[in-house]
Amino acid sequence: MITLSLFSLDSGAPGWSRALSPLTEGVFQFITQFGKSGWYLVPVGIFGLVLLFADWTRIGRSAAAAWVEVADLVGFFFFNMAAAGILTNLIKWTLGRSRPLRFKKDGIFTFEPISFAHEHVSFPSGHATTAAALFVSCAYIFRGRPVVVGVIGVCAGLMAVSRVAVGAHFPSDVVAGVFVGAAFTVFYAYALGRSGVAFQRQPDGSLMPKTVAIRTMFRREGAATMVEELWAALRGARRG
Image (cartoon, rainbow, N blue to C red; front, side, top):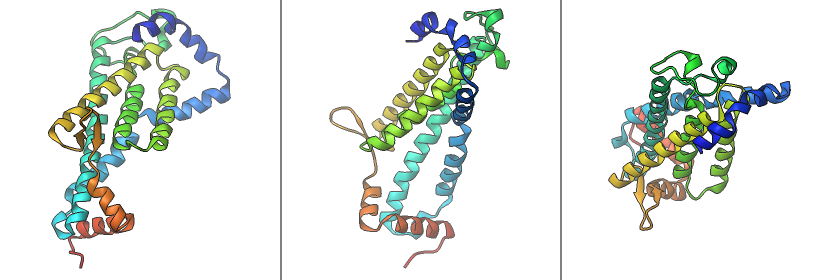
C-alpha cells in the first residue's frame, strides 16, 4: 500500500489539496488539529496519575478491582499512543523526507537523512499514526460496541485524510503512519495479553479487554457508585 501510494498518488496530491474550496480546506484544517497526540495524552495522563495516587485500600474490594481494570486500560492507551508517536518520530528524523511544501523543488523522492527540520520530516505522518493508534486501541478496549468503534473509526479516517488535504503530507506518508500506529498497537496489545495485563487471550487467539469487575460493578452498583468510590479513595476516607 505504501509503495502503491508513492507511485500512483503522491505526485498528484499537492495539486489536489490546492484545488480544494476554502470551505473544504477550512473543515480539514479544523479536523487535522485532533490528530495531535496531546489531545489524548494530556487528559488520559492526568487521569492515570489520579488513579495512581488513589488509596484503593480505603474502598470496597469490588470497586477497587473495577478501578484497577480501568487503570490497566488507561495505562495501555497512554503508553501505546506515546510509544507509537515516538517510533514515528524516530523514523521521520532518520529518513528526512521532504514535505509537499517542497514538492516543486524536491519532488517526491528527496530525503535528508538525520534531519529535524519541519520541511524534511514528512514520512511517516505523525497525525496518521495517532489516528490509527487511537482507533485500534479503542477497537480493543470497546470490543463488542460497534457503534462506538465505528464513530471513532470515521473520525480517525478523517484525521488521516486531512493531512493530505491540508498539504502537510503525501498519501504514502499517511499510509505509512497508519501502518505504524496500527501495527504497534496490535503488537503492544498482544504483548499485554500474553501477560494477562489489561487484556485476556481468547481460545481463538483474539483479545478481550479485562472488564469483568467493571461490568459487575456497573450491574450491581451503577456508574455513580464507582465515581463515589473513586472520590473516597482520593480523599482517603473509608466508605461505610
